[in-house]
Image 1 (tube, rainbow, N blue to C red):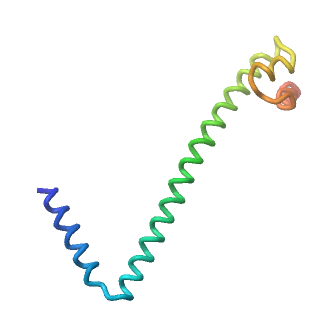
Image 2 (spheres, rainbow, N blue to C red):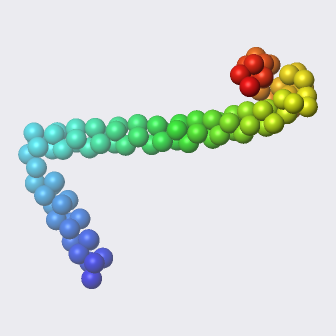
Image 3 (cartoon, rainbow, N blue to C red):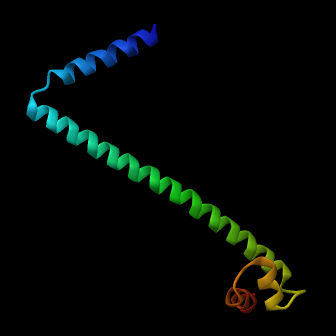
Length: 96
């Protein structure tokens, strides 16, 4: 029953749009374009956020590993092992 209701609602909506005058149709198309642009920007931001979060998570893990190695390895070895740059490892050593 719900499926039939959705189909009829969609048909009525399309029939309403078909009866728009030029000005109403232009406004409707402009609002659709704005909606699609905003949706696209939102999707892009969401995807970039996921990538950024993953990179930040990997960096956090590398820093945790580096901190655990400070007492047993030199800075260069830690940098090579974790993929962190040497300055980051030195900063970690100085901060602890």
